[in-house]
Length: 351
Image 1 (tube, rainbow, N blue to C red):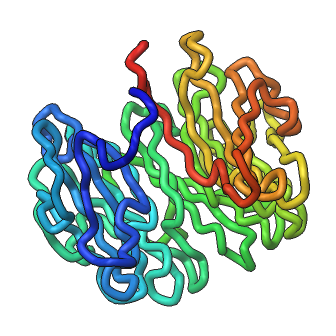
Image 2 (cartoon, rainbow, N blue to C red):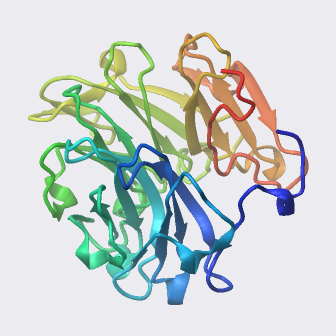
């Protein structure tokens, strides 16, 4: 791979209409169970913010418009923002990849997350989803961010869903254990994590990351508004344990659930400058080729909106300031918003 013009891409996919925000969100999974990776593409503004998500099957992709997608999923009504977040995983434990689609402004910003089981997907309205999860109250933005991980170490994929606007933008993150999911309100989640204070935007980004190699995928949560709306930003780390849930506001455990702060107390990384918004985005990959996954954290407004990405190697101190990162990447110019979104992969095929 070399620097190139986008017109020279091997495959070009184009949205149906102007202002659809086609490709605003992307995820990959084998949704038709043929052994080949497929691509899901969100278009959140389709038809007055109804939103659509398109699936293009892998193996013989060609350049085409979104109308030629193999499967098209459409939001329930206008102003749903269907496709605001996407993730893939086997949530019903049948060996096939399923697709989860967020719809963060459904019903006066209450928000929803829809699960479509893989294997024989068909084009349909979101109301036909196999499982529908709904936010607790209006103005929560439930479904804003999604991630997949086996958080309770039972061999089944679990789903984490955020609602960063919960309770005056305090924010929440919910974990729903895989295997036998049912349509329900977010209040029925297996685990509920709550941000520390108003305007933290806790849950703006989520990622699964086994930081300590214990075989359990831990959860990392971004709170880019941390610092009483000053937007310094912070990220929090959690590992799974038996019979606990941790509430940042109350700084205490509640019985009956299975998440607690790593090493028995709150672990976090705090942003450098005010208004940097550390935790706007998160990604995991082995960046130093030591066989261990590392963590990348975006702070898209850092350094006069140039934006920064901080990389912490797996042996890093996860109770640190962002400036102690192993690698710091900075955007080229003011207002670049570098780090607003992150993705990882072996793009140069070097293993």
